[in-house]
Image 1 (cartoon, rainbow, N blue to C red):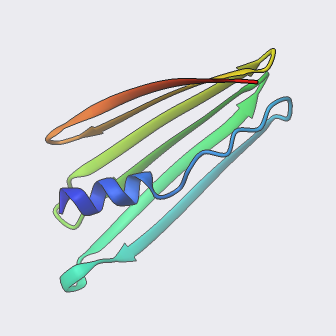
Image 2 (image 1 turned 120 degrees about the horizontal axis):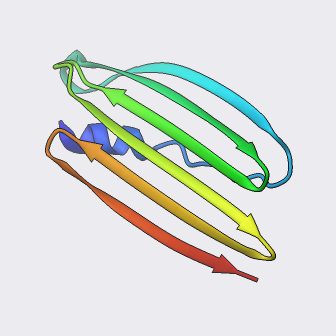
Amino acid sequence: MNRLMMTAALALPLVAMSASAFAWERNGSATGAYGRTFSSHATGGCANGTCSKQKTVTGPNGQSATRNRTVTCSGGTCNSNAAVSTPNGGWKRSSTISR
């Protein structure tokens, strides 16, 4: 089940937009194998060249996986930082893309 929760937490990528400011919120649910229901809550926004997103997926047993991602762009270089936390651990990843 943790694999399904991780897949659901990673399913919606962050779309990085520089210069425009906006905020959004989204809620959803999905039914997985054996009729188990998963719910999700995501928020995000962009301002001053930085976009961020947080998404939490909660499984039928009440356990949650959370992904936080931030992308900052300036002068042709974008830096991305992501972290996932689950009841069984998590991971972090950073990357840089330049023109």
